Amino acid sequence: MSLRRTLVLGAVGVVGACSLLMGPTSAFADPGGSSSGAPVGTHTDSLRDLGANVGLRVGTAVNPTELSSSTYSSLIANQFSVVTPENEMKWQVVEPTQGQYNWGPADKLVAFAQAHHELVRGHTLLWQNQLPTWLTDGVDNGTISNDQLRALLKKHIQDEVSHFRGKIWQWDVVNEAFTNPWDPEWNGAPAPGHFWVDHLGAGILADAFRWAHEADPQALLFYNDYAIEDVNAKSTAVLNWAEQLRAEGVPIDGVGFQTHLDTQYGVPTDFTQDMQRFAAAGLKVAITEADVRTFTEPSSVNTPTDPNAVAVQNAAWKQSIDTCLAVRSCISFTAWGVSDDQSWVPSTFSSPQEGAALLYDSNLNPKPEYFVVQHELATTNAAHRTGVGAGRS
Ligand code: XIL
Image (cartoon, rainbow, N blue to C red; front, side, top):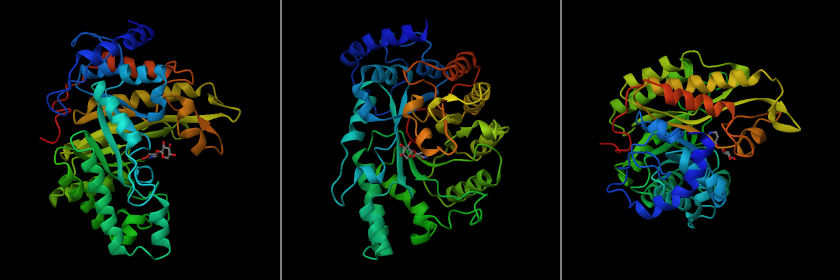
């Protein structure tokens, strides 16, 4: 069945699926197959159904306001089995004014996911970016002491995890706590220069996992970072740190590989070997924010400057999905958005201009990169993942 036909059938089928399928008996009991109305077990060529054949959740970051578009929402429902709010669970969005929570946008996505038998990756609880200004201003002007900051972080984590308790499969508890080997302050450990570690010490990262676990003992708790998609100084440092936390009994379940790739840096050569090291240490792993950007025309941010770039992009997507398929502990593969025009890339990497980073074009038509991922899922002989969607136990 062609993709287009899947989408059309899916748009009709969602209505039937919503009215016929009750909520799963336990929060994560859904096997992850089609929400398109196809009978369970029926093969389709959607990414979610192909992934389900090997127990792999295939996902995307979602902007909940876009769900009002039926084309977009049908695509999210039919192609994916796990979703991540791109921004709507970040502290800046959930508590823009101190003490006043704004759960609405994230609640909307969680409800959508549940209606379509998709799981949710919660993103993210402790990060130095996208913090509310009341918090950063208070720290800067001295009205928030370090003791108060610690109490505020604990409350933030526990209020948010409690709000979504039982509805989040994986939480990115800590995001990007390491600097990079090319930064002058790199010392192979979390921070220095990291907002939370500078103010509260490196132990705050372990506390974040403990607090999240108290608030939802079933959720899988992840550390999430970028530039760790090869055996390199940073991925080795993250692995050693995660192993140390586990040795201390800290409830960290997995490591997320963001996988923001760029054609100018080539395709990761030993991504599989790298990810296998984490799996061998007993950690679950996931690809959490995949995209592959390239240089584009400033006037047309989805048109690569070099017509040969797409071959490198295809190779990078192939390497990424193949790595996840090769490592049985890799339980989800998530792209960071749907279409090139909605991606964070053009506005973040604009000098020189980059873009064309995702699986769909601006009209939500699948690009060659989509068919690469689809083909790898359709032809894999990867081992079936077990326990996917079963929570921590
Ligand atoms: C990005 C979002 O995509 C943008 O919309 C937002 O303006 C900034 O954050 N690593 C992460 C994500 O962990 O949260 C970031 O998301 C991209 C880099």
